[in-house]
Structure formats: structure tokens, C-alpha cells
Amino acid sequence: MKKPFFAKKSAFFTLILIVFSGIFSSVLASDETGHEAEPFNASEVILHHVMDDHQWHFADWFVLPLPVIVYSSEKGLDIFSSGRFYDEHHNTIEYNGYKLDHNHIYLADSGKAVLDLSITKNVAMLFINAALLLFVFLSVAKGFKKNQGKAPAGLQSFFEPIILFVRDEIVKPNIGHHYERFMPYMLTLFFFILFGNLLGLLPGAGNLTGNIAVTMTLAVLTFLITNFNGNKSYWGHVFWTPGVPHWLRVVILPVEVVGLFTKPFSLMIRLFVAITAGHIVILGIICLTFIFSSVAVGIGASLISLFINLIELLVAGIQAYVFTMFSSLYIGMAVEEHDHH
Image 1: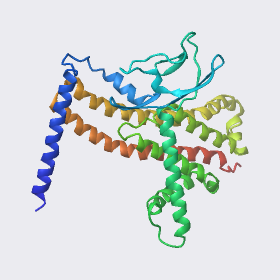
Image 2 (image 1 turned 90 degrees about the vertical axis):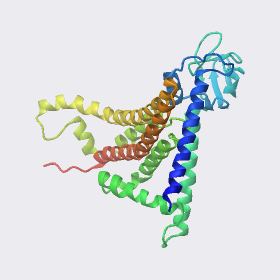
Image 3 (image 1 turned 90 degrees about the horizontal axis):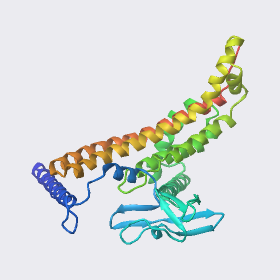
């Protein structure tokens, strides 16, 4: 009895997709004055969505200006809206002695770069991500206190199994009996990356975890926690590897020292590349619709993009898992007690 209903529903949505694809293709072919539009630049569109920006561009008719905070020895501290850098036709203009060039702010007269502390799109996403983390886990903590000794309910019932998975399957096996002191960092790391990855898949969202500055900060935190907690045995393995001939220790020493820095570097690059590559692939496939101006290509690109988006949901969880697992492994290697005979 339900098959005809679902068949009609599927046909209805397919018809809508075809109609809108045709509309978009016709809009692309000519501008609002009826003249031929400029050639579609796919690389510019992709880079614009992947890279950071001083304004949040949701659509041509909806652009959210963000606060610009700059400091220079010549002009001191200045705070103003990023919308001041654009005229009514969205062309870049100078404002108050500053100019915006390739998303960098300079002094207009000397061309000197300024200290830019602006709230950019990725910084705004960082605040949103942090606010969401606080809201969720304060609610979970409140539910845990309220339902102590009872079955979990609400957000607690959803997140408690994930928290236990991170503890029992990632942190505890890799760090060992010292794991409890590192659990707050590991949980924060896992959920920060997971939420950032998932939020980045929303239409118009910023590419937070695909920003190399963010992944570098997370990797540096893991590097510092690992090496500040390294015990005597850990540093002994680095600078005077036991169980090998003395002459070979001279060869191993630079390899071990380089290894201290390649570990966080691999963490940084892995997350950055995985998230950014996924966004580029999805945007590239969507751009095929506008490159070929074809309804058939639009339908195919929409279906493929939907499939890749589902894969990206899986990748979002996998990357959070991998980053947390390797961080736990590196910390576990630093705090592990070795017994040498």
C-alpha cells in the first residue's frame, strides 16, 4: 500500500531537482541584464569556500560581515566591520587607511602588513564549536548528576556510550594505567574534532578542521603533553637507546630526535588533508553542473555529491578517532615504564 506513495514522492523530488537544475543552468548562461555572463571559475569558487575569510559568505544576497581587529605601530588598535572593505557591487575598496588584498590586511600608504586579530569565518566557527561543546557536555554532566544510579536520559543517553568508547577502546588500551589524568584532554580532543568535522559539512559552514592552523595547534598540544609527561625511560630511549651497540646509538640519536617532531607533524597533515580534500571533491563535483550547464550533469553531480557527503560523515568520525588514538599512543609511549635487563 505504501509503494505508490513513495514512488510519487520520489518522482516529485526528482521533478523539483530537474526544474531547479534547469533554472540554475539558465541563470549561469546569462546575467540579469541578458548579456553573456563571465566564464565560471571553479577553482576560485572552491578556494573561496575552503579558505578562511574576513566575511561569512552564505549566498550573493546574504553576506555576514565579521569584526576586523587590527593593530599597527602607525595607527594603533582599530576595530571595524569587514563590510567597510566592500562597495555596493562587492568590489574591494580601501577603508580608513587599510586595504584588503587576498584576505590579508595592509596599510594602504606603505603596504606594510598589520597584526590581524580579526574574527574571521574560521574563528567564528571555532567559537560556535566551543559553545556547542560547552552546551552539550554541561547538559551531559547535569544529567549524570541528576540520574546518578539510574538509567541515562536525554543527551546523556546518546553521548555516554561514545564517552565510554573513547575511554575503553582508545585511551585506556594505549596509555595504560595512567590514562585517567589524560582523559579530559582526550575527550575534549575527540569531540572538538568530531563536532568541527560535522559542522564543516553544513551548507555555508567554515572549514574549521580543514584549517592547517587549527590542526597544527591540536598537534602542538599533543606534542607538549607527550614530552612534558615523558619519564626517564622515554627520554633514555630517545637519547641513549638501550640494547644496541654504542656506535649505533650515534646513528639512532638523530633519527629519534627527528621522530619527536614528525609525530605531531603527521597528526597535523593527516587531519588537514583528509578534511580539506573531502570538501574540495564535493565542491568540484557540484561545480561540474555550472561548467557544463547541463540538467543531466546537474542531476548526476547532485546524486554523487549526496553519496560523498554520506562518506564524509563517516570520515568525520574516523578522523576524530585516528587523531585521538595516535595522541593516546604517543602519550602512552612517553609514560610507559620499561623494564630493561
